[in-house]
Length: 207
Image (cartoon, rainbow, N blue to C red; front, side, top):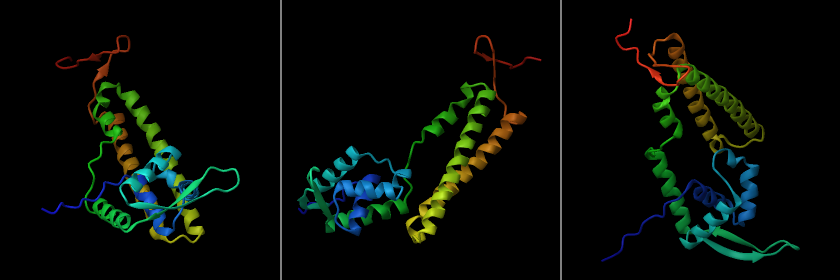
């Protein structure tokens, strides 16, 4: 019986490494510097240790291959890697999967929103107003990043995700403003809390 070939699961960082190696062979330190220069850390969590671990794992999975080692001056030896055919196929397969089918994610904010009824309404409103302010600041930063990429002549296909993230942020901020308005107007009923005990006050059947 022929054993079915499976495509190794790729993390976001793993996808990024393979995408960089599609451009040219490079060593992990060069990858790290290039990621930072392209502001990839705005979208993917990048740490040197995690990057080196990811490259090693991709090598173990035979998706990338060591091409050679060099040393410049007193610097540590650096191993250059290149992408293999299997790595190129794994990258394309994973990108297609993620484009086709949404991944079930579990944002912490959704859990907090579900339990917001445990807080006094004023605290919820104040916290959400801070969140909206943070989102608006983030949107401004993304717009600056978008303008920078455009000014450098970077083709839009490389930074289209910035537009997507900005659209997501704008939609969330709009929804939150509407939710805050409901809370402030009393349209959305909320339990009252005793200021001294911090406990809920049950107003059921009270005049």
